[in-house]
Amino acid sequence: MAPHARTFSITTPIYYVNDRPHIGHVYTTTVCDAAARLARLSGRDTFFLTGTDEHGVKVEKSARAKGLEPIALADANAAEFEGAMRSVGASFDDFIRTTQPRHTAQVQAAFERLIATGDIYLGHYEGWYDEGQEEYVTETNAKDRGYKAFNGQPLVKAREENYYFRLSAFQERLLAFFDAHPGFVRPEARFNEIKGRVREGLQDVPFSRTTFSWGIPVSSNPKHVVYVWMDALLNYCSALGLPDAKIGAANGVPAERAKFWPADVHVIGKEILWFHAAIWPAVLMALEMPTPRRVYAHSFWISEGQKMSKTLGNFIDLETLRAYVDRYSLDGLRWYLLTQGPLRETDADFSYAKFVEVFNADLANGIGNCASRVGNMIEKYFDGKLPDEGVAAQEDWVRFTPEGHTAFNFAEICSDAVAAAEAGLDAFTLDTALVQGMGIVSQVDLFINHTRPFSIAKEIEKLGTAGGTEEGVEADRLRRQLAHVLVLCAESLRIASLLLWPALPSKMAELWKLWNCSPLKSADNPSAGFIAPLSELAVFGGEHGLKPGQAISKGEALFMRADGKLAPPGR
Image (cartoon, rainbow, N blue to C red; front, side):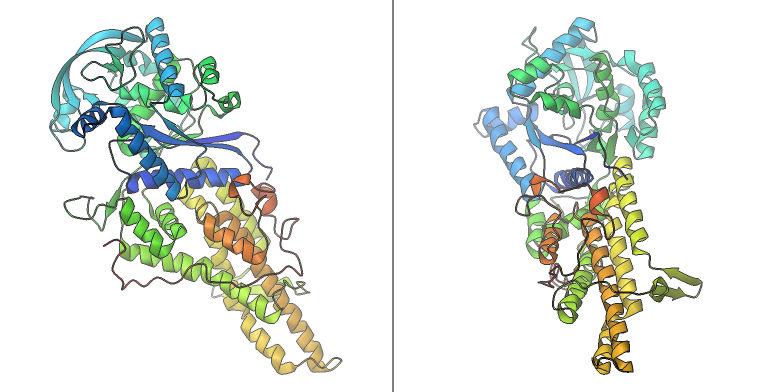
């Protein structure tokens, strides 16, 4: 497969600074990070954006209650979010804040542009308002909700002069766009919800507020501040110096960043899907800009089978996650989040017992044990150097089953896994993409169980090395056979490690050092990139494969087996 020539751009939602970082923020960011890493590994020119949403009445009220100016609270909390995301290994290319001039100037210019085109107009609103979501709610929707906000609090009555975005004018354009782009929203069930809601009819959306002052002023009418769903959503473009390239240049945004629009995927929580899948594409249409290629709305985490609650004491905050990292490593936490998380339609349970089960099965007993076994055998039987693979017939390595037999064709197994991983990135079935490497590990384990290299080594020891004798000839044959087994295992694990790296970057880098096979341009600087794209790095026995005589050592175990009898971390 040729390397991808096009760019890859991925975004998290920007996180509201009135919250504290928790598992939801960490999960979304980790998903985006793994996707960005896989894209970089695949040879794509990649841009990964995250940041903070810093305006709104809640920030203003919280700051005043603490005797602070809103910007002081925003500065402190934005720094906490950025530090939290770095602490969980997020390799983002930019961290944008909605209080930065590069953003505020773009929002003001875009707002005035839409006033000029008639897509934004001045009006009045009277009705229900969800303070938690900062969302106006129709009477019908309010009744369906039992007049409750998204967070369970009562909706409030509001009357206010607002600028409105003429969303009602975009119903047919949105439906035509949805028909032409069947993969725009994923998972599919969520797309069906959005299409159904748009078909029911659209109302114009308030796009400014006058009941508080902590926001971006409307340039032509400064008593209004720009509403969150215009302000926040435009971050995806302002970080790239858009919509107005001159504003971007004046604020120091590199011009070449514009190539990353439209984004390949916005990754969000399902609670903000409407704004991203209906309002945002309509705004972009009004601005005559391309729409993102995909919006992916994941579900939520619950904890130990229950909805998270600070009252119940099962809320998984940053401190709890750090306790898991301290005990099981950052990669151990990343693996659980990425493979067991709520990427699809249903919520996922963060269960300590399940964490231990997955950690032991996939990491300690999986890649960790398999790499240790292979490294140990090469160290023990071939003085820590990869042997010449010798000569052995393919039929020697057949696993017999009651249904017949299947050959261990590792070149094919690895090639199929690489193709599936790259296809998973394109379809954003990321959980499927990330387990492809573990599938190779499982095949190596089965191969070792079938070929029993330890037994081959014992047989060689019994026969001795008397040259020219029948025993010596047999010992030479078995030595070549043993070499062949271990070379197949080691090369397969090398390719598996590439596919596992987006989820397990630190531990796979450790393995690469032990086996002297790092594909990074600089082993001490992972951000320097790879020496070749995945399609070339993962060729079995190819230019970048393991070579005879290459030093390979067992080293320390990558993952120590978890003891489920211990109390959960952080408790």
